[in-house]
Every structure is written in structure tokens, then in C-alpha cells.
Image 1 (cartoon, one colour):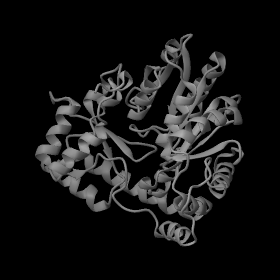
Image 2: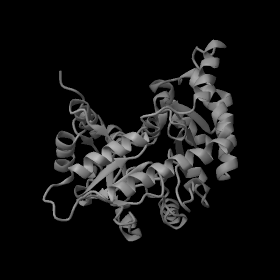
Image 3: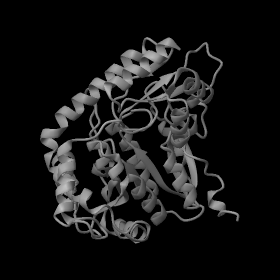
Image 4: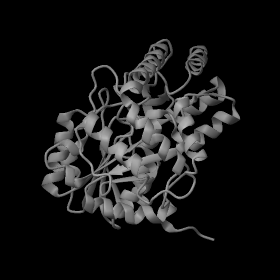
Amino acid sequence: MKPAERTSSIAESIFATMTRLAFEHKAVNLGQGFPDFDGPQWIVDDALAAMRDGRNQYAPMPGVLSLREAIASYQHTWHGQDWDPESEITVTAGATEALFSSMLAFLDPGDEVILFEPFYDSYQANVLLAGAVPVYVTLHRPDFTFDPSELAARISARTRMIIVNTPHNPTGKVFSREELAVVAELARRHNLLVLSDEVYEFLLYDDAVHVPIASLPGMRERTITISSTGKTFGMTGWKIGFSMAAPALTRAIRTVHQFVTFAVNTPAQHAMSRALLRLDSYLPDFRATYTHKRDMLCAGLADTPFRPHLPRGSYFVMADLPRSTEEDDIACATRLVRDAGVAVIPPSVFYASSNEGASMLRFCFAKKDETIRAGLARLRAE
């Protein structure tokens, strides 16, 4: 039986491919974008308490109210954003579902969507599943900046949406206020929606500052902001994400959400509602832990043939291949997992109009220290 045409251009995710190869070759996995250690035990205890208290049936379609209220509270405290828990916040099955539901809610066949490349692969897949057309603007090394004139030139009469991801996967870039102002001005001028993926909002290093694009003048009513508790608390398998948008936008998102998942894991929502109220005490150690891991990986890569670009956010590092090599990223990543026993991600799959990705690899440092050390030892011996 032939599948729907909309699936024909969507291949297996590179993450699934490299994870399978890592398993086959018993490799140290520095590719998968999630921790190989659990988040805080006290969050697990809160989820168990919710189960024992009988919080095991369907949650309300928009999400447990206490979680939506906690989201509104932390957004106000940390970002100066005021979102109404009743009409503007929707809990979803991870940020992945929030992205899908948002795109399906607002994209018609033939609409164009601006993607900054390298892009997280689900953006492109979701655009295609909605029948829309991705249009690409490259983030250029070494700072992964974009050319404002290139962005402006990519906008046409069919453009409907711009997707922003900050802090950025896979580069670790944190968009500056000035860069976001360029995006915002074009969105206002051309009456565009902005879909802002901010799941790494608290994974910041050095002097980096996260600026929600919805906070810029004239952007609140045209921005869908998406985040997730999975990255902040190291519980990616719980899949507790959420969208924040003005009421008219939220109504459309919920129209899709109610028939995609309807409701999300109830006890995990209750646990995360409490976790978000403890960010003050939680975040200092969280950031110190990931700063240590970033610095360990980047310092270690300096003793290998790969040259890292120091990230200011997220838990990813992009590293240049040796200039002398004739391998591209896919050949190199395949050889490393097979011969050196280290799995990484070849980032060319996150590009569509530029070949910059072919000369880099993506590493993930959301790993135990011993995992990072073992991976570096194998790369040094390679």
C-alpha cells in the first residue's frame, strides 16, 4: 500500500540512524541530544506522589491548571512575559508536538516558511507535512550569524511564518536582541507569524542572555513561543512541553492539539508544576554542571583533530573537521562510530541550501563526565 505523498520526502531522522549505529558498534554516544543521566530525584518523588494521590486519569485538554499557572509565573519572573494560564498556555506532548500542532494550525499548502539553517530536523519535516514550502537562510560560521539582506530577500508574497530557535540547536548560538529585532521588524512589515522554539532558555553560558522575541515591540500578538520542561530538568522522556501565544493563536493550536494527543501525562504535569516553582534554587547548580561539561568537551576536543566552536547556549558543540581531510561529515561520522567507537551527528542533514555542514560535526555534552572522557579518549586515539 502506497503511503501518502506528504511522507515521500521525509527520511528517517539522523538521530535514529546514529543511535542505531552506536548500539550496533557499542560506541560512546556523544550524538544523542539528551542526558545519559536522570534529572533530580525530588521531581521523580513528586510524580510518584501524584500517582499515589490518584492523579492518573486524563488531564484537562489545555493542561493541568497548576502547571499552566507555574509556567505563567516563571515566564513573568524570569522573562518579564505575562501569559494568561487559561487562554494563552497549552501543555503539549513535548515541544515536538507543540511545533507540529502550531504549524498544522497555521500553514496551508503552498505557504512558505523561513528556516534558519542548520535547523532542527523536525522543523523541515513539519513544514512539509503541512504541505508548506521551506525557504532557507544560512547561519554562517564562525559566529553563526545571518545576513539581514539575505533574510529580507527570502520573504515573498507567500511567506507565512519565520521559525526562530534560541538558544540554537545544533550550533549553540544565542540570538542577540539586535538579531531578533531584525526578524521582528520584517515580521511586522510583512504581517508574518514567528514560531519561537526556546526549549534551551535556561542553558546559557558566560554572559549570554536569552531574549524571547515575543518581548519585542509589536511581537506578542504574532509570536508562538514554545518551550519544554524536558531540557531544563533533564526529564526528556516525560515529554512535557508547552506553547504560549495570544488567545486567537492559542485557540487554533488547541484545535489541532485536542486531536493529536488531547491530554498529556497527568502525574508528570503535577510534578513539573512544582519543579518550575523551584527554579531559583535549582538553576545555579544546573548551569554550573553544564558549563563544566561544555568546558570539558571543548578543551578535550582541542587535543583531537576537531576544532570546536564554543557554544553560548544549549548543550551542543559544532566542531570543524580537519582542513586536510577529504571526508565530508557523513563519511567522517560513519567512520568514527564504526572504527573509533564514538557516535556524533553529521550536521549537513540540517542544511538545505548551503554546504557548510559538510565540514563540521555536532557533539552533545549532556552526558556523564565519564561518558565525555571516554569519548574524548577514543577520539584522541583515532
